[in-house]
Image 1 (cartoon, one colour):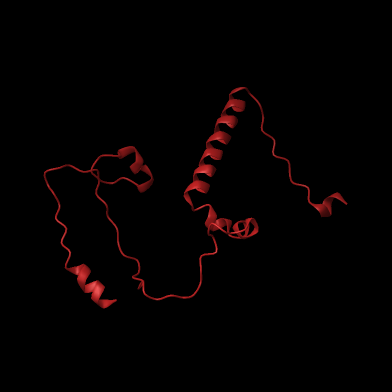
Image 2 (cartoon, one colour):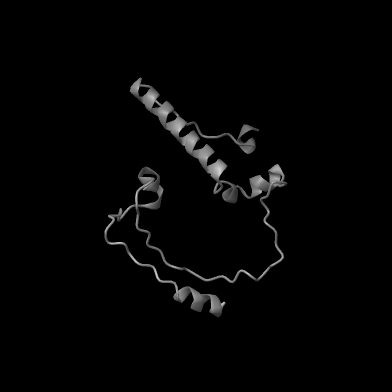
Length: 119
């Protein structure tokens, strides 16, 4: 691990002062600047050696059952397809709410009935 750290210290990155770059942009706004030059500032939070194997497989893989994915949905929504689906759902919800708000409708959110309340 220390060898890799010493090897990484030998890497020199030089800033090209001729070409302008975008400064002070958040990562989620970078899609608006595709093809442009940007400056990336970051830090290393921790160095984890890659040769240690803990013997634990990823619980979310292609063969994962639906109940496993539901139990680990906090991890599932970090994936590309699930996150894109949720963004699409949010956009649709916002559009529907704006439409009904512009048409002077009132949104009512009733409380949920659970089995103990029903009887």
